[in-house]
View 1 (tube, rainbow, N blue to C red):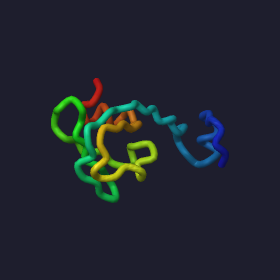
View 2 (cartoon, one colour; view 1 turned 120 degrees about the vertical axis):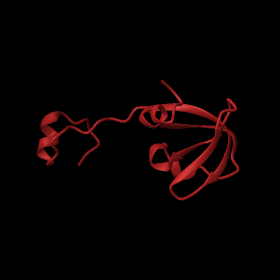
View 3 (cartoon, rainbow, N blue to C red; view 1 turned 90 degrees about the vertical axis):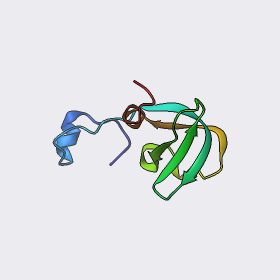
Length: 88
């Protein structure tokens, strides 16, 4: 498969009953990565609210973030941002 855009006919050609959606990302800032596992990171956000766990699969280049990083930012999927209450 190539990286070109898909249309609904392509989806059916590859056995899908739907066309794959393009992910939308939003940028968030964090004060610190408090904890990290192979599958998720725990962020202390800049706004002083509760810490939030984010799955690495929902973070662009998720494997590059490690415990102890301070005052940074990352791109996360719009879907997880809504699920975690980071945006409305």
